[in-house]
Image 1 (cartoon, rainbow, N blue to C red):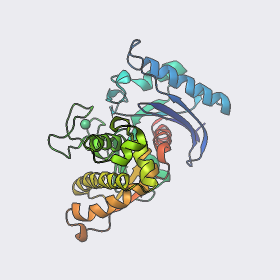
Image 2: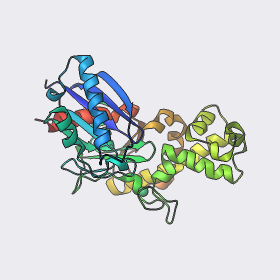
Image 3: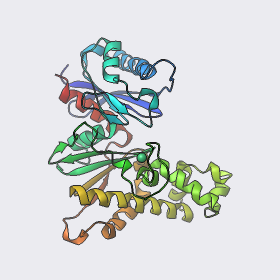
Length: 323
Ligand SMILES: [Zn+2]
């Protein structure tokens, strides 16, 4: 069984599980909605759903759930011992030891947990857009922004396992409130969720008349409406995406200043429309990065595996940490 693992990426809205071979091939997948039932204890509802998901996958592929290493990627602060310490986007599982709980549910001793963006970074480093690159940062643009830092070829985990929480770098002093309790966090300006939030702010101020007409009101403008309109060439939507590109570049320039990384891999839901954001981000980096011309080229690439990189990386964590 050493050549197959299961990786699960648990997000705020859905949980994707993949069966992955050691060479990165995906052999099976299943996706379910993430439950948000708080009445039965932290993580209990989540684990029940994940156990069903794993059993379903295993039944289809003729595997035994307690004989396959399982990695879980989680959106939040995951301690080195696997416990989910803080998860603003998954509050019903916050504080739970999902690895231990899923292990109990499946009678398995082979379940490990890691932060979801750290998982994505590992997958891109092993098989994807970070292959052969020893210093890069994985940036996942979804509801928020997740980060995974590869330095000298290794994942940076930090003292407690919490390194790479780049979405909560403050990029606007006294800026808009964030789910983490802070204000002005990067993910409020450059994530998939930020596209919709900023569009509604602009729409309320009367600056997006075409989008308001298209969506039926300023409060009805969503991220996907903006990206669809920008892809069709609607000028005000294109301009908003360029603005998001500037905010993205601002955070990347902070990371380049701290880490001297030469490469960024952009993943998550918004990376599917990276053509609308990355050209502007690359252009803005030239002005925002300290000593841009004095540095070797800084590259910004789209993730190879898109929304699947977290689950693939979770499988990789299982390969590496379950023995
Ligand atoms: Zn925050």
